[in-house]
Each structure stands twice: as C-alpha cells, then as structure tokens.
Image 1 (cartoon, helix red, strand yellow):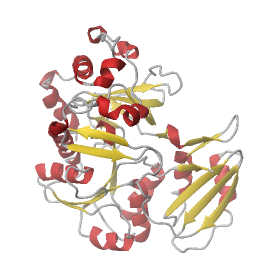
Image 2 (tube, helix red, strand yellow):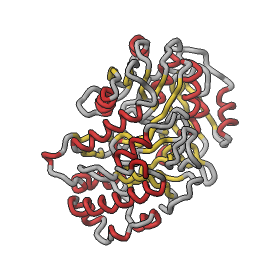
Image 3 (spheres, one colour):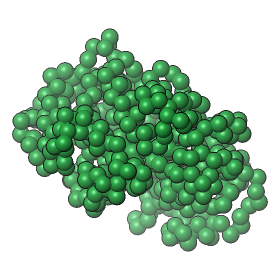
Image 4 (cartoon, one colour):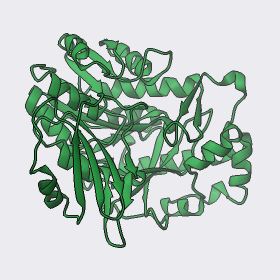
Length: 415
C-alpha cells in the first residue's frame, strides 16, 4: 500500500494531482521565499541575519547556498529575537537542555496553528501503523497539554484510535503490565529494547520508535522477540516534532514536505551533497509562525534515499539517520568512535538491557552494561574490539541501569 504521506502532501500544498518531485520543489522554493520575507519582517534576529539576502533570487535549490545557516547556538543566544509574534500569540514554549543539565537551554515557541499542523501530520503518519480498532500506548513525554505525547494522542483521536500516554519507562515491570493491553507501542529505541528484554512475551502488532537514533540491532531484537513490525519516525522539537515516517515498506522516511524543506550538506564545508552521499541534515520550516528556522543545522547524519519507494511514491525520501555529529569522539589522528557503532555492536548482545559508555582518548573505552542479572561475558571486550575494528582497550563493569536517561537522550561521554 502506498504511503498516505504523498496524498497528505498533495492536499496540504494544493498541488493535488499535479504533485510530482518537480512541482513539489517549485512549491517549496516559493514557500521558502515567503518564509525569508516573513522572518526578515517579523524577527529581529532574521532582520540582521538575512540583511543581505534577496528572497527573489532563490529560484533553484542551488540558490539556497547563498542563504546563511541557522545553528543551535543561535536559538540559545538569540531565541527571543528569533520569535516572529507577540508573547500573547505563543501557545507553547518547549525548553530543551543542550548539554546535560549544565548547558544553557534552547526555548522553542509554537503558535496554535504550528501545533495543529503537527497533530495533522501525526494523524496521517500513524494511519500506516494502526486502525480504529487498535489501542496505542505512548511510552514517552507526558500528558502535559501540547507535549509531544499529547499532540500524538490528539492526532490518533483524529483517525479514531484510542491511546494512553504512559510516559517514559522508569519501571519496566509496571510498564509491561500495562503494555499487554495495547496493539501498538510508541517509544524511544533504548527504552523499548529494555522493555523487550524484561517482557519478551508481549505481542504488540506494531511498534513505532522515535525521538532518538534507531539502531538496526534494536529493530531486529524487537521484531524477533515480540514478533511485531517495527516502524521508525524522524523529527525534532525545533522543527515541530514531526519530520518523516516510514510506510509499510519500512525503508526510508516519507517526509513532511508541506511543512519542511530538507537539505544534506557536508558537515565541514556546508556544501550541498548529492543524494548518494551522507552528510548533515539541514531543515527549513516552511509554515511555522512563531519561530521559523531557516537552513537549520540539525547535527544529524543521513542521506537522501535513491529511487522511488517500493510503496509506489516517487517523492524524495530521507534515508536512515546514521547518528549525530555530537556523539562522535576522535580517539587519535586516524580513528573516531561514535555512539551508533557501539549501539549496533552492543544491543545485539543477547540479554543486554542497556549500557553507558565513556571514552578516554586515545585508547580507553569504559562500558557499564546491564545484562539483567545474567553472568558476565569475559570474551566480550575482545569480541567488541574485532567488531568495531578500532585499536582500543575496552573495560566493562556490570550493574543494573535505569531504563531511561534523565532527558531521554543517550550520550557518548568523553572522560
């Protein structure tokens, strides 16, 4: 079955039957020019940031290179100046910690219209996974009005699907006791893995993984343990949560093209990359009223998918996100270690429920593993060295770990 996202895009862009990769690109460029004019007129930050930009000169994707990037530091330091509306028009402000609990926060603002567009996209994307007869357990966020959990619940209600906002998994036994009542589970990859190791007898029909990098090893464990179909979603708070979701083919992400423009650039030079090259994901919000982001450098690594989707859609799609720039540590002049490498190697270890990692350059990697009370694995350090193909010394300590991290995100710690 073809993804519902192209039809949603055709409707939201008013392109209808004329929707194609070419007509969509022209529509997005027209919206991009409107966003430039809007932001420069309404935002004190963009008035300066885009002072020398001629919106009318952006007629091809190649012209985007003349537009300066927006970076996370801008939100931290200039967030209030980026806002395009009055305080009374803001419906929600979301605060994101930037570097553990010590870094200055990012505050992202949304209007009611911004939030409603996210609800609309969630409704469309979730229709791939569930039908009105299904029940969904949302294992993230909270029930706070207009939190991501609440927005997802509202989206599900639009398609007649009932749901429970359970929140992040802190007590896996308690979560397992509730999860058996539901047909679909939504949560963070590491927390869903922990739940699967704790309650292998659960049988959800579908699982949606979101809000963090999704290792293939976790997908494989969930599908083999729970005998379910696992889907993944890509998005971030800064751009309005929803970004892209897989269809039934479960390959690349069908993008939220009516609201976002996606670019892939070289992380070092900022130069646009061809579809077959992996680089940094750059996003522009095409509809956000409160706080538009223009050419926002996400720090995520991915490439565009090649060719049409097996589901039949010919629109461009974002391929698997392969990690974050911030979760890579240089060991020496030749070798780097990133969290994605460790994820793929460690989550495939039978019985592992979770782990923490600290890197001490140039050659020391210290791991804390939660094996659920099972015996230590004396051969694991050497096996990991061979799998990673990096000349490091690995030490391991075994202990019990909580299912979720304080802010839901896992980090590769530099010791």
